[in-house]
Image (cartoon, rainbow, N blue to C red; front, side):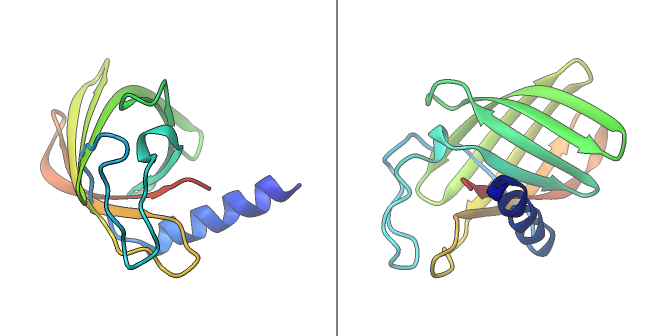
Length: 139
């Protein structure tokens, strides 16, 4: 019963956050806002918002490989992702039948007692304009 409430909180935080992203090996992130290191961003689920699409990126082994699933109303899409995090910079490569996307972003200072967030933009082969994205790591 606690999971739906926690998921609702994650969705609320995603709705309020801007968007950015990029890739980083585990254990290479320094402290954010004095809260201590994010030592396992590639071993945690990422809750993502891209415009009207809400997604979940699930790690597939801790090496930066993720399975992504997005929903927009009744629509659903899936893709394979590769995430690299260097310092606070995040780079994500997404591949699916429709084409590919490259996300870039920055880890944001962590709010006290909060989860790490990434804000950035992405471009896809089917869209010429950069689009905003955001993610909450964990939860």
